Length: 83
Image 1: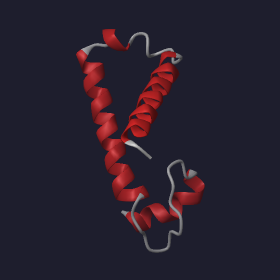
Image 2 (image 1 turned 45 degrees about the vertical axis):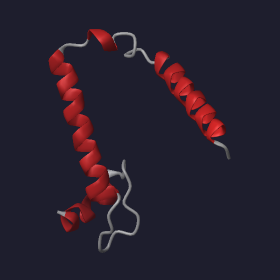
Image 3 (image 1 turned 30 degrees about the vertical axis):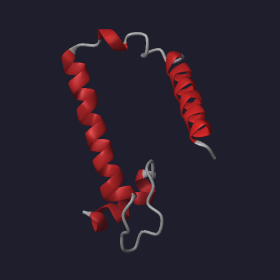
Image 4 (image 1 turned 180 degrees about the horizontal axis):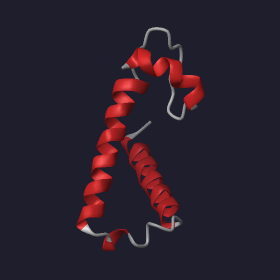
């Protein structure tokens, strides 16, 4: 695969992502968001990134396959093991 192929792939990928985002109702108003909403969004992204690395990517005793969205009743007994 050449550098040109990689650059073309990245350009097409970026265009695809932008087109997908343009279909979302909240995308049109993204530029006019208040500063507090932008800060809240940043905090939520940080929390989710920390959760992804500390819980879902890690190995935990007695939990074979933890995954985001695990139902509460399925994961309830494991919650106390993780914390």
